[in-house]
Image 1 (tube, rainbow, N blue to C red):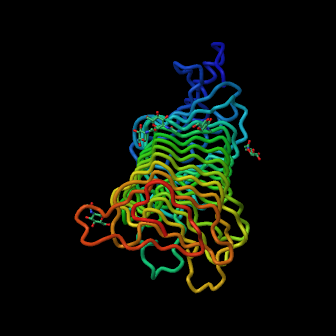
Image 2 (image 1 turned 90 degrees about the vertical axis):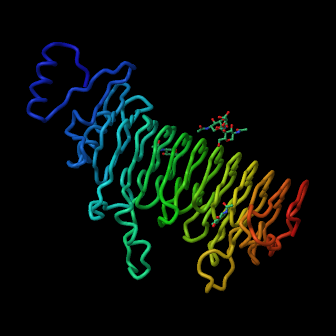
Image 3 (image 1 turned 45 degrees about the vertical axis):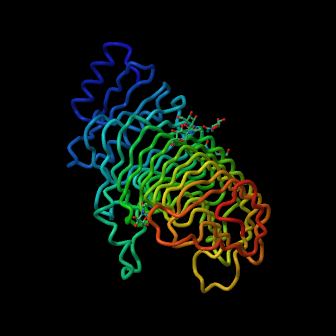
Length: 402
Ligand SMILES: *[C@@H]1O[C@H](CO)[C@@H](O)[C@H](O)[C@H]1NC(C)=O
Ligand SMILES: *[C@@H]1O[C@H](CO)[C@@H](O)[C@H](O)[C@H]1NC(C)=O
Ligand SMILES: *[C@@H]1O[C@H](CO)[C@@H](O)[C@H](O)[C@H]1NC(C)=O
Ligand SMILES: *[C@@H]1O[C@H](CO)[C@@H](O)[C@H](O)[C@H]1NC(C)=O
Ligand SMILES: *[C@@H]1O[C@H](CO)[C@@H](O)[C@H](O)[C@H]1NC(C)=O
């Protein structure tokens, strides 16, 4: 809504005073500002601001001018929130989070598998230095307790679903209930400058999960959680992960692939210049046994620094239920592990390449690998373990080839 004449201002104030309608502000930038507190959101963490946030988004989305949603300083509690397109506002619609969003701790308010979802929109930019606090510490025990078989699927803090030409940068995430962030079915997407943290023993708190997406960059992150730092699911094409520091957690993983029938191939993943500290894996590709036929190809892990990593380089096609006799049908090819250096815990081999007996790995190259036992380790690294693969070793090769 644009305010041009006095009569509209008066009308606007009249509407505001009834609490029904709100006046968007013009910020210093060209965009019209839609502040959630003008739509009923209240800081302090007591009142639920989900509906106010959705109403704010809807107004920004249907704007005909550049629009910015502002979540100001303060703590805003919210249950499930959906920001849905398509929108008429010119792209990108900016969502500036200055304050902290606090997830509701009552799981029954989450009807889908997310807390905040941004979906079916072309051009969104999430930024502002603010925080998504998932408050998972109150619900993690449901997941950790194996006795509770039908534990609820815990909501992901932020999901981008079918959001193209979009980005998120300069945001913090803490203690998500489920994953911290997911990018699903997106193209031309950039994730950068995020700080993600949850305790090392929190269950399924992956940092960033990407699936079904094309041309995605994930750069300049610091991630410490209880699960994968960056996990790369099925259906991804041309993905770059660079300048990421991980730990604690499970490291950077392609997969697990092949759990579900309808999965699609992974093609073109580069993981470059990342540091992994005290993680259970470094560079990992994992696929399920008895999987559908799939391909994972053109994969590069390069310039990685490892500190005290348990499985520095691992392909595991035996993932999931060991009772399944049928091997994995995910064909892994054209994989390069280059310039990977640092220290390993000595409980597992530095290099484990367990490929499928039905579709052995093809074109796997390891060059300039230099992994030594972590300081203070009592003993040597276990011998490398390779199965159904003829890997090519080039350059420095410590602790040796297969
Ligand atoms: C995003 O891009 C994909 C593939 O390019 C396309 O199928 C989809 O409709 C686009 N979505 C939106 C919301 O523009
Ligand atoms: C990803 O990074 C590459 C260069 O590193 C750049 O050419 C490309 O435009 C970036 N893509 C996105 C979606 O940011
Ligand atoms: C990695 O970080 C360096 C230093 O900040 C920067 O120059 C480079 O562009 C970053 N790489 C990517 C792919 O973002
Ligand atoms: C590698 O990433 C780190 C941050 O994780 C950055 O400081 C450094 O400049 C990057 N180096 C290159 C060559 O991109
Ligand atoms: C390596 O990690 C293990 C836990 O996996 C820890 O007990 C040990 O203290 C670490 N060593 C160093 C030198 O950081």
